[in-house]
Amino acid sequence: MSGKYIFVTGGVCSGLGKGVAASSIGSLLEHHGLKVRMIKIDPYINVDPGTMSPYQHGEVYVTDDGAETDLDLGNYSRFTSSPLERINSVTTGQVYQEVIRKEREGRFLGRTVQVIPHITDEIKSRLFKVGDQPDVDVTIVEIGGTVGDIESIPFLETARQFIHDLGKKRVLFVHLTLIPTVSDGEMKTKPTQHSVASLRQIGIQPDIVLCRAPMPISEELRRKISLFTNVEDEAVISAYDVQSTVYEIPLIFAEQKLNEIILEKLGLPDTPCDLSDWKRVVEAYNTAERTVRIGLVGKYTELLDSYKSIYEALYHGGIDNRCQIELVKVDSDQLPESGISGLEIILKDLDGILIPGGFGQRGIEGMVQAAGYARRNRLPCFGICLGMQVMVIEFARSILGWEDANSTEFAPDSKHGVISLLEDQIDVKAYGGTMRLGASPSRVVPGTHLHRIYHSDEISERHRHRYEVSNSFREELAKAGLIFSAFTPDNALVEASEWPDHPWGIGVQYHPEFKSKPVSPHPLFSTFVAACVRNESA
Ligand code: GLN
Image (cartoon, rainbow, N blue to C red; front, side):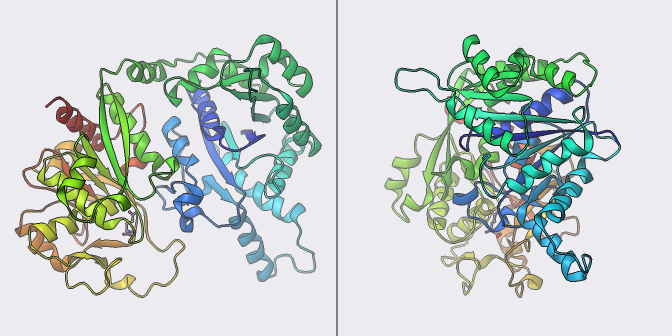
């Protein structure tokens, strides 16, 4: 096997955009015709982020094969066409769980089990499982956290061993660092020098440094960084803050020939590279003709990353409709539980609302109120997972008059548990990995709004939930006018619902946001944004 590996590390502090940088590199290499794979390493001890609060971790990104992973896999999916599955996400928890399992099985009998070589070997085997597949040219491994964190040491040590095992022509190190400015605007390189020094201490010399800074770095600064870090002049790349959209980053990197430098260093042929798709995305973003205001009615709204894929998918819908999206975060906890006038003040200037997924009771009543407002006022409304469940609850309360209608997640004893657990799930007690997870097919009902959106009888989308529309109430809800527009192929579960006689009121039990890309926006998001545009111009 001769697959190449690029390790992407981060220095100085977190939140510099390592995921977007790694994804942009992946995209550039794909534009050279290479088969790229992406891996995210998360040094925390959790086996996966599935049980973490969005406040801790941001969104949980779900893969087709049902893995709950870091939100950077969402970035990889938006920028590249690397297949993303369980094996593309590695955590300390998974690695130790496996090594300890083997130890209990007696696979290391007689030996002391240690970080080096047992943990590092397990990490290596996980990376090779992805990167040494026959059709893979380059595997990009993003090491989460910041160089210097205790938790990342075994992963950095593994990366160091890669050079030892595979040689310089197969392994490349890219280090993303921060160039802060001080009060008079002067850019400072000292933190970069320190973070590269700590990488060197563990035996890693970066080949490329990406310098995150508010502005492009000067030639003089570039030379200074090159001198101190021992990285060639042209391999010091300016990763300056973009004015428009993150989708400009592949173009910014390509302007500085980052792709050519990588190809040269890895001994790969320099083939032509046509970036017109990214140029189109950026141009569409920059030449948007109008702005629509979309309210995101959720309970984790203060943290931008909690609904990352939804924000991005809305932006993709905006690109498709030549409009900018102004996201208005509406904390559902703050919405009045009753009192139409209060609701109106908050929601009246919106062109549409989106109710995203979530767990637990907090904020639910506010979401139900918002759904009712949108239904009555013919405001476009998109419910995703919990959002769909809320739309069904609201319909049952308002149209069927079942005041206690609820999900049994929030009101276990409600007589009208229109959203409930499946019989065989009621006794499941564990939390980690026990939901309905990953991709499954659905049958779309011809003649419905959903069918007109997908133009297809069968779709496949990803799930991450425990509760379902209760089959005991399906018939009565349908009789009262609620349209169920998609089902599992065996008809056992409802996958989507829509309001009758409404411009765009659709709830889906699955998560379409995970499959939207800027170059191919998801049709649900495109048509939702289009409905918001119509609302704006009405
Ligand atoms: N809490 C709901 C359930 O488990 C919805 C989950 C979600 O929105 N992802 O079914």
